Image 1 (tube, rainbow, N blue to C red):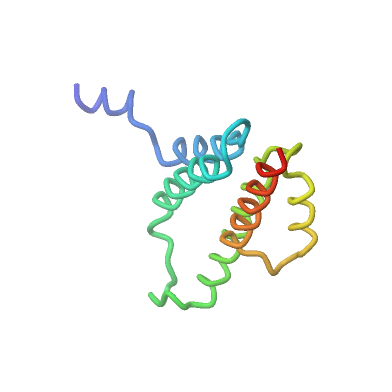
Image 2: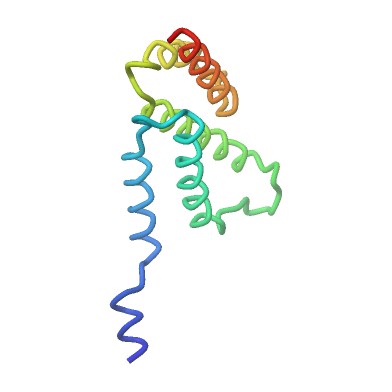
Length: 125
């Protein structure tokens, strides 16, 4: 009986992975502050990272070139996910300016620039 229930109601890693990617894609700022919107994305990113915990360098080093390259790639993906969900009317110009900068972006700097823009826009109201 327990096996039957487990089989019927358990969520596989593939299903959870698919749902997390769908949730990240659907996550939009809408009326939220940048801080709240980013926090929602962060929870989803952390949940996604939990599914990939077994992914590590073959040699066990955190400074492995492949792992560093993977982490950098993951950060670029997160930057784009964050920027895509921002309110286009309020942050379209800031987003374009950040993307024009190219490859020197990191998530913390992007978040900082967008929150500064949000403060500026709030003062201008």
